[in-house]
Image (cartoon, rainbow, N blue to C red; front, top):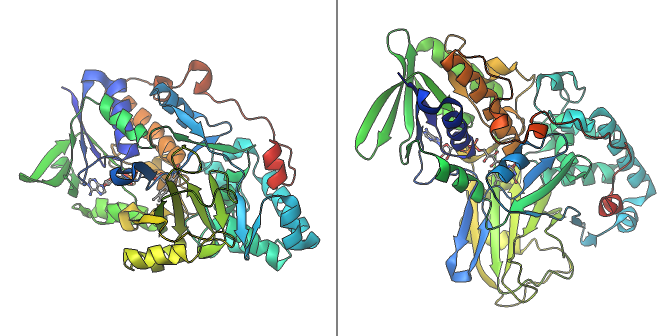
Length: 489
Ligand SMILES: Cc1cc2nc3c(=O)[nH]c(=O)nc-3n(C[C@H](O)[C@H](O)[C@H](O)COP(=O)(O)OP(=O)(O)OC[C@H]3O[C@@H](n4cnc5c(N)ncnc54)[C@H](O)[C@@H]3O)c2cc1C
């Protein structure tokens, strides 16, 4: 008889889990995806605004190509999706001025400041070689000296107030939280996104939701929408049962295996009926719940009036504690519609999230960098996407210390087929979600079929043979790392 597998959540992790398990198990499994919302994709969401003839990324804005961890790139290629590189040399709008290169940065930071920041990068890269970065979130990170310190504490190594402030601000533009609320290691890992020896970035032509749409289109298993799972029972009498609400009323189904793809606030909203299970899930949530928020504010303008000052795909501003501002304008030259997308993070995002859209849009318009004047009548509309609660992100993925993989993914050892995946277990990105899914589906398929599976069996479904085990990346010289060096590479 085919194994009954339930997958809770129809975001990237849920759809990918279903897609891989269909291929690993064939007719040995019957799979169903249960999604709470009326559409799939979760935090990968491309919003189309037909009246302005444009679209923007409301959730995931950039795909990371991590040296030595090409898995996401392989999946994107395998699905036949076209990509476009993101230019990775942001300019900074800081302290009322715009900084485009090392000389301008040194002019603002001063020689001592820039030397101190350079030293910090030298130490940070020496402690985090690319081969380790490629395996972020694995157990060996417990040995890293900065995992057990806060990022705020680690920033204290920059013996220059301006240099420390600049580095905190730069990091905050990627990381969804404040330096005191995350580890030194996760803070450094976020800075390294800007280092081309570690990571480059790209987007999908036609919208980042192409990834989830491609997976969904290739699934043969049913995906039930508007079907939130509300309770789970796992005990010796009933086995694993999940209840969900659907338009036809409540339904309870029996499963041989159940994969949850919800961040901790979502797990908390489920009723875990068995006492032992409930306390195991509670402990899992307590360890991993470092939820924080993003606010995506997208402004559609009649034209791209900031282009001369900020010609690249994004810039970083010191507004809101450090914010990345993406230029998502369609590629039709300076005269076309301009799309500016502000990814506000952490405390400022939380404070703004409760305010009406008009106030949020006004706050962003008021934070335009010096030298950028919004022409009268230029704003077509402003869109506010609030990513809080179950849709938020983890500011300390994996928690401290990181748990062994089996415990991380299966909180109740009595029920190894009740599994949890998600970016909150690794690095708060699609790459981490992919790592989590690969681990879980390979284990599960082996367990259900009682057939030994190669550790890379799931990865081999979409990676070329040479890419199954990624070669360790070439060592990057542990040089200081600044704007001009990035431009050269
Ligand atoms: C604003 C923002 C920007 C981001 N930018 C990037 C980026 O640029 N690059 C990057 O790599 N990552 C980025 N991330 C992180 C990225 O979005 C996640 O890593 C990824 O989308 C995780 O996918 P997932 O399927 O694990 O979770 P989700 O996408 O959250 O999917 C979970 C699904 O479960 C559903 N669900 C919730 N509760 C229930 C329930 N009770 N029953 C059934 N279904 C339920 C939800 O509706 C959702 O569809 C960003 C995140 C946010 C919020």
